[in-house]
Every structure is written in C-alpha cells, then in structure tokens.
Length: 312
Image 1 (cartoon, rainbow, N blue to C red):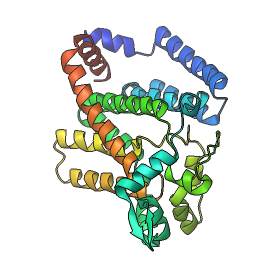
Image 2 (image 1 turned 135 degrees about the vertical axis):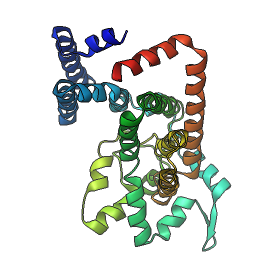
Image 3 (image 1 turned 180 degrees about the horizontal axis):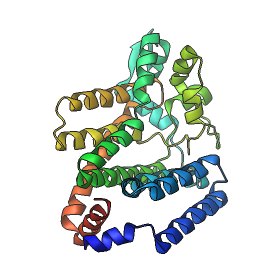
Image 4 (image 1 turned 120 degrees about the vertical axis):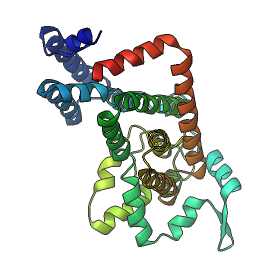
C-alpha cells in the first residue's frame, strides 16, 4: 500500500500531466468565473514549485490542498453574491443586537460597536489590529506545525477547518447580513456591490500610515457575509487541536489570541456580538460534526486514512 502511495506521489509523466492540466483548468475557470487576477498565478506558481521541488514540499502542498480548495471556493463566491440569493438583513439584526447587548451612553441606547466607535483608544486600535492580523496566519502556521509534528492530526485539523467554512458559507447564503460598519456608513438602505471597508481597522492603518487592512478588505468576496463571524470560528478550531495535542503553555497564547480576535471584531465594527456568537457556534458544530462523520462513516474514514498515508 505504501509503495503504491509513494509511486502515486512521484514526479512522473502521469503526475506532471495531472498537475499541468489542473493548473491550466484552474486559471481558465477562474478567468471565466471571477476574472483573471495575479493572485491566481501566484497560487498556481506556489503549488507547482512545491510539487516539483522535493518530496517533502510535495507532501506539504498536497496536505495543504485542503486550504487551497477553501480559498478557491471563497474566491468564487464573488461570482454569485449571497444578496442575489436571499434577503439581506440590515435593521432587524441591528435592532436585535441593541435589544440584547445595548449599552446606555449619553441617554442613548447604543450597540457595542457604536459605543466603542465613540470611545476608541489608540492603544486598543494597535492591540486590536495586531490580534486581527492573526486570523489567517495563526491557523496556517498551526497547520504547518502539525504537518511536521503529527500529519494525522494535521489532516484532521485541515478538514475540520474546511467543514466549518462550508457551514459558514451555507449561513452566508441563507442569511445574508450587513456588518456594523455598513449600517454606520449607509444606514438601513441596501446597496448591492458595496465595496469592502476597513471599519475601525482604518485607525490602525492611519496610525502607522499604511494601507494594510485596506488592501486586505479590497479583496473580500462579499460584504454581506458578517453572520457568522468565521474570524471568530478559526481560533476555536486551532485551540481545540492545540488542547488535543497537549501543547501546554502555547494553548494559553492561542486562547489569548482567540479572545483578542473576538473582542476586536466587535471593537472595530466588523461584527456584532451576535455574529461572534454565531461563529463560535459554527466552530463547535463543525468540530462535533467532523468527529461524528469520521467515526460513523467508514468510506470517509478510509479516505482520510488514505490521504494521511499519502502525505506521510
């Protein structure tokens, strides 16, 4: 079995043809679905370099293909915006947030986002921006760590990450929701094709005289995808597998980053408290569901085992 797996991963005529065709197909499909972008060439270039460079890099990029598929799906969401599928929630979500978590300030009832926009502090802007920058690097870095430490756990982590995103995408399309900054900038009027905004993270950019978050949010797939907050879901998955792998003091850091991301999401007006709670729920459901599927559905377990053997 291992010999067959090793042979299937070898650089030969079949694998060269497969990788070449997949690369070309991805570029052509992407150009048709969302338009050509240099990011697509970068992704194809990274994959090909890793695949051909060495045995370890080939196994690494094949393992990380789970994350690559996620990124492609996320990018392709631009082709079918969720507001073309379902009604966008504006005032109802805002009023429900205010009803549940409203803060009395200057004889007015404000949402937590509105309160912190009026009471922002430079130190919180800096700390919050640093926390929010962790939302993708931490899962990817943690995944890389697991790849070299325990590839079985790495694969389960990556697949759990993918499943949680799929659950989030389902909610995005069934319950399109505007983020708090949208209400602050546009009120309760729906404007399709609204570009992404940095919200309160603009204060981080302005303080350092950079366009870091501005450049990130320019690439967003859909601004009406605030519910659930997948920013809030990712660190839960990381912490769960950190605890599962008994990382000790490192888990304290992971937990701190998790809470920091939750609070920053609200502080910078990117998410309501309700969005954060929905993201937490999405992560918990995804973790439980993945474990159940792995335990109960034998064909899926065999697929995972085979995938794991391929990247060992």
